[in-house]
Length: 141
Image (cartoon, rainbow, N blue to C red; front, side, top):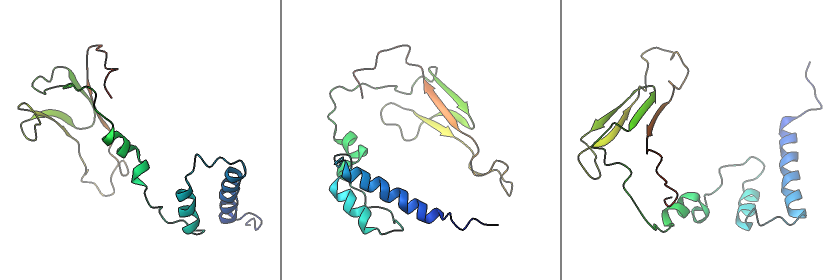
């Protein structure tokens, strides 16, 4: 037997409207820009993806942030400070090096050969770490 008094779509609309009006009634509009509010209203009840305001994106901030000092993290000539955990492997590659002769290559399987895949969509995770030996990197981004 279904409960005819609970409609998840109406509750979602109610919750969104409550949040939108409570922000406006408290004049907390500094958190939500006027353009974002207009974009949300223009998408209607069923929201389509909002247009991206790239001027306020973290990526834009990080790309335009001035570089005060830079230092090479690793020239990739020596792999002794690198470690790998998880699926796949880590090797030194002589293709796509920025400076020096080598770059770091991480290889991980993308197909299992079994249908359906035994683990769902993902096969796990791979992680590489560089041991910086306790150096202080606070001056760098």
